[in-house]
Length: 449
Image (cartoon, rainbow, N blue to C red; front, side, top):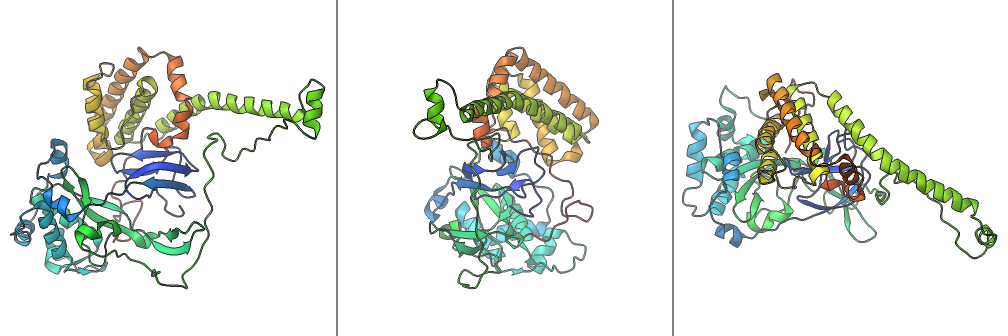
């Protein structure tokens, strides 16, 4: 990763295994994404190798999917603010005659693909943005994906907008025959995803000139993206890649531990014949002892230091709530081994723990609610909410501390499996930046599409 200037680590959805990485990674359940750990400012400079599990749907199974919607999906992905009448009438008109949810979504997709793609939008004459887009029939991927999702919800079909990257430009062939792709800002894209019960989230492509390779069978749209380098361009730039170092040694991937001479010619055998240890062996033993001391003593110290750093960054009620949530989830992991599953939201995690008598149920539920607001609507929290979150966190941590001795928490903290598999750690990130992409935001962006 270079020049991304964000915490994200792009990967095909959904990442299933981290093969190797030069940094500690976490799984962010809310966004379904990998991020760098809290103590790393951005993913720039990180090398990593990921194995992903990419679903492939068929037209037949999508048509046969039931129209039932689980309550947790219904409550989160169906609500709508007030929308113009034009949005509702167009959604009903375009999908009239479609007998299945899949056919309705294909009808919406084809409707939007008859629009024009452009990042230079016509002037808005004071209309609602959705109404303006439907009238002018011109926009880029954010307009297409967002309006598609709203119209799907109008039809009582759960939908959301995903933001990421398309697959990039082929630039070289690896020695093992695989193609190497380069992904740049040109491949930034937004697309809608629709919930199909029993199958999960299914991507559609309403943006003209775009198409996902894994969705060709059911969308009928050929793979296509915004690309400067065409696949058949023999003169495209060629770069080489360097494999990321192994994470077998989590303390220092670059640590060079000398080998012991255990026999044969040389000083090692001579020292053994004299009944003593060679200087190399002594240095090796001391080196190993030093590494072990640094490991078993350094991890608890690092854990304490990271908590202090996190608390120093608290500059708003939302960050205070995020800090309380982060510390509680870490305490539950170290005390009881309770970790949040990759697919769980914060509320779902709290709901699952409701059956565990060791965790105060009301406190966990209330804290999860406040942490969810901190994640998606930071401005909706007050100083009183922050103080209440601290009280709830204190109640939960006290419950853990009274049941689990300090040595047991330390033992779990230094467990090598927590270091060798960073993706299993609790995902904790700062709140999403407010007003991102707006004139007042700190990270202005070019249109995604």
